[in-house]
Length: 468
Image (tube, rainbow, N blue to C red; front, side):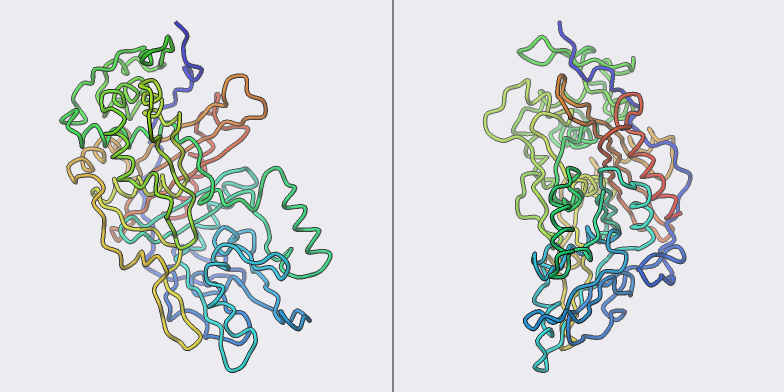
């Protein structure tokens, strides 16, 4: 029999390295002129913190400070040119505004608000107040560096996105004008094989690998396949994919007929592939869709690319592969942060949003277009299921307050130019009791192989350290 190509990818699945964490979000601290932190723990800004409406371009606000600005362009039809403070740090949040190439991200979604006062006539431009914490944003960006990847942090109870980072990033100021230098900068970005303009946190979905085990475990408990996370499963080791001679193996001896609790701890692919087949395609798909997979209309309020679970006629061998987060399963970092938030939040979810409020030119304050803060919590899985998964994660982490799973995806056998991907997802409570969920993805050299998911774990640890 032929073993599957990922047979030696085992890595202990739990982030057991975190000390007791408190996030310290109760007090505001000052930020520097570029929106970066001078101290720890600034709270996201409210509409009252935003600068007043102005003639010209309005601003995007982070923790009470604008991270955008404007200057005269010298162009009659477009009299103002956008400027950015710490542009690469916040590019995944703001998007860009260019006289030559239009708008994207929040700049595009709220173009009517941000540009209302451009032509004068008594109108004023409004401001967009974000939910971002500059200290957490900076920690994630610094930890990722120039590597390809993304990091997302979400307040599980409110849906507020506290960090939204995609790397490598870009400076939207470089092409905000209408001059030869702007054209040159744009063309260089378009030609860059690392795709800096791609928002990997929201707009790129890839295989989640071991982190998808949590969705399969939730389905097995929800559908009554097993009564608890401690009941032994029927998964042999090795496990042969149905209708094939391909085996799923593991370097962890406890994976033979392991319970869900043990399988989460040791990343037992044989268990989760077996669970997927026992559940059947329709049952697993239903749970995945309850978590928000196959939803092509998700906004934060920037449109998020669809996270997918296979649909249609699916062979049993493909169902087994989907159970280990491969096959047709694709997720964004935001979606994996949402999955952790649901588990942490007792099985309920709220819609995530990167916008707290919008202040119109006349001073009227509006909720964001996707209205996450006012949306009722949605029941995704039962509370008992969530509590059991919390218990399994906490037990596997040695009782630490930050608990989660890691995983990595090896490049396909024989592929040229493909890169491995490291994942880490986790959650913890801050000292005021708020639950924060974090998802990190790192692509490229150093991810996978002997390094396993370590690159993503390192980024996660730096984010939690910043919040302690």
